[in-house]
Image 1 (tube, rainbow, N blue to C red):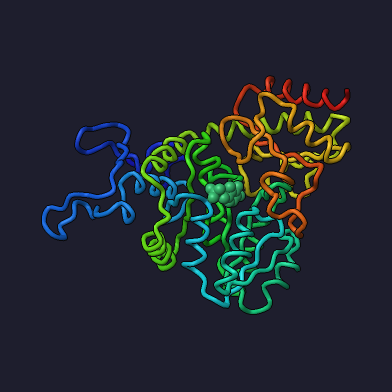
Image 2: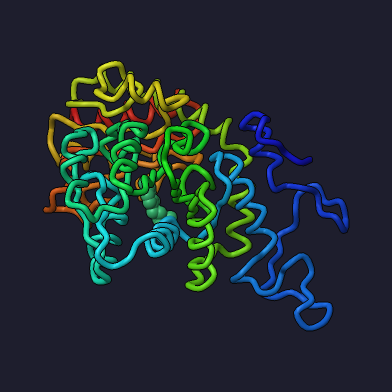
Length: 388
Ligand SMILES: *Cc1c(COP(=O)(O)O)cnc(C)c1O
């Protein structure tokens, strides 16, 4: 019924923050779909609950669960991943501060930092995170207060050495933030490798069912947590009760889902390797992936995301993307259903023509948890369309 940090991941996923309702014994904590709470006298709050933007028991339940799974002391839940990132950056940085981020960071993250926060005096450098000398050089200008890592990255599936970057960031007095959306806390826990902050788009694997948008910030440091909590309350991009409740429900099955995502993706990546039409398969589980050993050392398994390029160029990639029927052509990732994305014109359209642009012959697969035979048959018939 309650949890302890000594328990295994799945036990914590199911029990952290999930104490049965004290009034009725309901095994599943209720959805507190309310904006305000009755007071027993002026300022006499019941268990601290006052107003929904500040606190809500359903959001608290999710936050406790998230903190327990990332191994952090504090977690904050937001209405989207980008809302979480914005709150974190405004809590931690001030005008004149500099962020170093990967040159293949999530396009929306880059847009937030480069086009929105730049107007408030936050500067940035986008570098190849696999090149530690380049990271050091970018940090060296003196004002770097935050280093931002995504591993695996989207959509090129590059792997970054979290512990090595943590060292570089800390030597310069900067925070290391890891966007752990692609791996999820089941596969990788960045705080254990020295990261200071983990951010998530819980819209993806954590929610896992493509039915609830959300984001999270997880931190250990009490001072930083207080600042993030203040921005969450004062700016108000909190997750709504229904979204928090759905996310909590999804998160309970994260472990079993990720095991299946990983095994299905491994089988599909190996199958893709053997196809004549395929130019390259980007999946950290493949032995020839440049980050394979590093991924094996910091991840439990290799996850459900694969990118693949085609010898037939953009035309072939688009044709495959439009020819599947079990894989749905859609943005986003991390749900139980398999999705197919053409990043150049879809998720990464905002970085087209910049240094963050994605190859035009690339498609990205979010491999779901359907029966792998059906996924392979679907891809097979889509590749057949290229041969005709
Ligand atoms: C989707 C995503 C985000 C942004 O999250 P939203 O919930 O869409 O705001 C950030 N980082 C990564 C890696 C993502 O995939």
